[in-house]
Length: 209
Image (cartoon, rainbow, N blue to C red):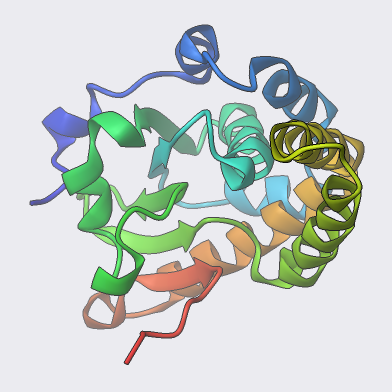
């Protein structure tokens, strides 16, 4: 299954996607609004000789999507050289999984960059690789707080709230990291010959034996 021009045209704009968010809408909007695009990143995309197309497969319930998706949507809307189309991953599971190795099927969000001929240039999966230690530290902090809760249900609720609040508080810092890594993988992809694309960025999971 490929991502054709006709299918790409069926996706949503940022505004349309935000309008249909049912879970985590307020923190998503806060992170989106608090994202500052690094000047070098915006200059890179504005300086492209040809526009690129960006397909975003995301889900409103996903924590990584809460941090990564609003930052990349903000960049896409800031540059005339990025044509954006947003899809609900849950409605496009087969298509989304076609951009993932088998052992990562179901991972979200996924960002797919295509050239003017709709050939894939780069893909960026989940979030910035260099953010993983910070996310792990957040999870450890949240787990300790949840362990002190009076019961399991209260612990889960506390954990969700703490994670969300932490992601919002780190919006400016984490968004800059995400956008820099995203720009780097796109630049890598565009520098490669067609038979060596796509470049891949974002998190990595080792295959399971």
